[in-house]
Length: 415
Image (cartoon, rainbow, N blue to C red; front, side):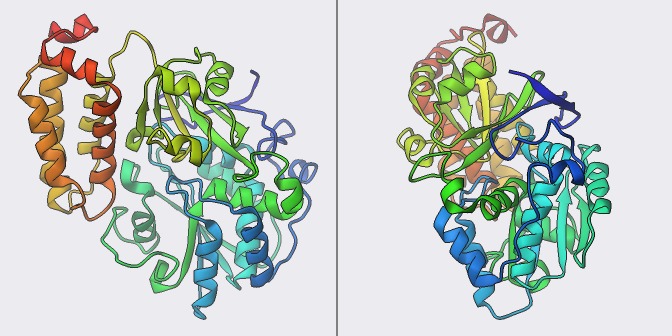
């Protein structure tokens, strides 16, 4: 595998971005607008109904984690009859994800083509783009791209606060409105009431790039990659929270084992699929699954934001889960009881199990998870609990070994 760029996109290390079959197909030419137009023509000018028809044909799902149909967001905002807003969310926040940063560093004009296409169809003059402050190379790369573009579109770039929850959709609109970049409770989706109370189409950078690719290729050519039910490609970040992270692009439906091998891993290693809010897949599941919503759902997992975190065979998933929950407990907005009190209690109980082999910690973990589940003001507590519950499902023998102080990582139990 050849890395065409090494850029400071990761939290801890550089991340290699690899030439891909579609969104990343032109990165070898460079990120400039003339180089971009060697691969991608000017996007068509579509009105609202034309854009909706195009989106309904391809069923593009948001690539930010939730997998919500993008066409439904656009349709809801269009049908409002009100003044609308468009937001490109490139914040990420998740340590294991670098794909949106990679896009803005290597193919920024594809993202901007998609955002411009959506904004034009919705009669929106200003596009808001939120970028990660903890990845300082991203903003200047984006601003260079914006300076190359002519036209009547106004772009506003805002940096995040640099925390795990910074990329949450309502945390994004809070930042864009000049308040703390933290989630708030809302009972209405952004497409109904978002930025400054307007119907807002808010999605991540990859989603807008996919829209641009769909508009340029048309539904038939767009569907040449992927599966009949899930056409297109997706960007993945593999091992993005440590050294040797890789961003690559694969057709939907690709075998997970193939991706692992391409990135230098054995095909049957334990994987945390979906990042820190993700689901553990033990080796036999990782070897068997494909990167599709339907196939991963059968294993209780999902595509999420395309984050794949392989676990080396010497590491313990119970210990790693405890470390992640400790991190997540410190990254909450602390605006409700489940985040302020529940997640620290969960992290404490997991540490007792992982580090000290306290058998009574297991029922305590279950108790705290049951109390906190479904009660948070945002998805942060439930995402954390989902990770913990997947640990119990995937590794019952490892949990039992910890209860008997027999973790395979002897260094951990010796502390």
